Length: 500
Ligand code: 173
Image (tube, rainbow, N blue to C red; front, side):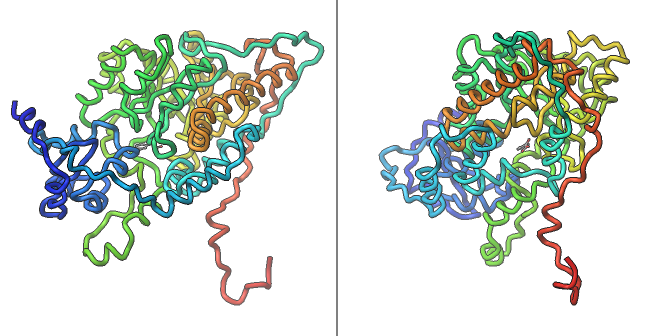
């Protein structure tokens, strides 16, 4: 075929280097040469970032941001020019950037992993060592980050009612999610762009999940390919898939069928992101990336309104609606769970529509600011499901967002959640310490579970019941502090120093 002829073309790096302009722009990604000239105006992240690599190897920049097949999916075969002549590739004396040097130095001076005693400790180290771009992308919430902070704070409004004098010599906290065993009532939830934090990206999570008997939800927008993540799993390891529904339904159908064929056990359809939220920390990094000086010189009108996430999310279909569920059911036998439900009415609709469950989630506070936390709406969701006669053995409710301790998880379980999703803490863990960091986070949670179960007087999760918590204040939201406003506010002229 025409494609294979082109693919066999051998091109030297010198030849590629001559096509380094907007008029003729070639780039190298994973040893292959592509002509992206006509694609420049269509690139969701803007043309400027590609032009920075015109005539060069763009793999390092490309990798964390794009699903591995993004380039082949978006460029017609005629633009796949061939492979790079390996003899022409200079042994690169890899010049580290100033930031890379600083990151390496911080890794040298970070505390040993054994000193991390909580998930908060690990997060602190991640913040210390990580490159700004990665930290800002992972840590950012939407707008004033009220919902993001509330996700964590809400757990502080639930207190225990512990029971005493029960024989707690043996305590167990394993359970099942969608019928599959898990050692703790939690799963690793989907987060995009895993390689921003560590070169092995999501594989750190796959490996640790296997060792710890925990289920991983694979993201649509993983940095590693789906096949690599499945390939890194042990033969019996259970994995779920998170799905962003594409405007091009054929792409989604292909993803779903491939997942089912490869043995994925559940499909979590994200329903809280018809458009991505404004994560301003992330957006600012992008702003830096395309510096104003360059822009002024080129006269190009760079779209600065996007961060890493927004730049690659334009494929998500905002028209997705309840009627589309029928179509999703028609292309797979996997159980369907709606991820991102934020009120009881939608939870009941999901159950009535034949879904296997819902995740009460606001996307880690990254979407609608002032959406309630999952844990806050959990009691009313459970009550509404009961009222609607939904059978709790065939419809499971999960919560994610803000979980940092086993005690948080036990509060959710007490109030009716089957399990919770944990996202950021695990990606911070591998960003700071690789797979060992994730294993440590799992160890910490296991330790906390054992202690909490004993002190609560519960020997198994069946004994963690609604009476064991006092959630009377759960919906009394204390107004979270507005950091952005307070740090920027300038008093009216003349009032400085006159009032506190
Ligand atoms: O939260 C996110 O950042 C996210 O879900 C996403 C969505 C699309 C592209 C990249 C990230």
